[in-house]
Image (cartoon, rainbow, N blue to C red; front, side, top):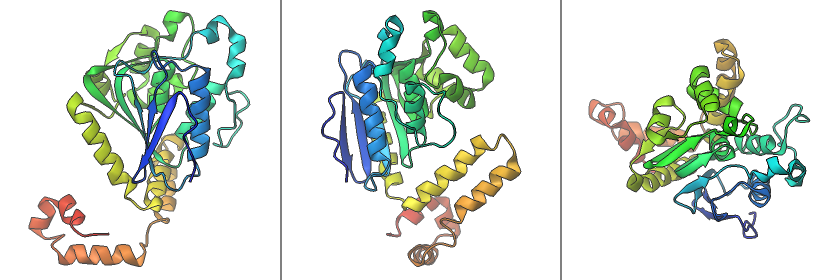
Length: 290
């Protein structure tokens, strides 16, 4: 099991298969050289950690999830070279990618399920980091997102132009990027930018319950689901190709092993597939122990 105790800009706590990664880089959780390098290091270390099945990224600062990339990279472009620049182990030619793009790709291709638990402001690279994760949940009235790079004379360069359109569509992505405005969680939810905007007092409980539920799944299920869903974005909209990838992924979990078959047999005997059992099938299944 890897050790994650040496970081200074983030904290990692692992419990029941869930790694809670807390960004803690005062005063505003700036994505500076220190935090970016430590995120690179964490992503590289956790990739092979079989004890971690879900990663939840959150912030120690209630006002800033991650402010944005350090503006000194614009004032002194040579400092960009100080960033960690490992291979993102995603395959393909990465020679044209900058270190921020490689960071996003590194998180995007992790085998674990990744969840952003959002509160505060996330602009630019902070928003790109959240979009690189598998899911995003935000606190209503306390979360604001933006890609403000056009106000700085540039465009998003850490993956924003590629990660945003699949979530919100071309027109809304151009609105976000060219407008450079701040969006609240409710609008972000309506656009599809985030999964859900939840009352602030419910956010922790919802995300923690979801993370623990996913972490309790068989590793093969997580791998198969991520592979199959990922094929939908890489097949270029060709359904036949995507279905082929889904079938391949399904082969990793079906036919199911004997323990799973016996659990399903017990579920049927306990009332699954009866009218009463089907009215709350989730509870019917959860009552059968693994």
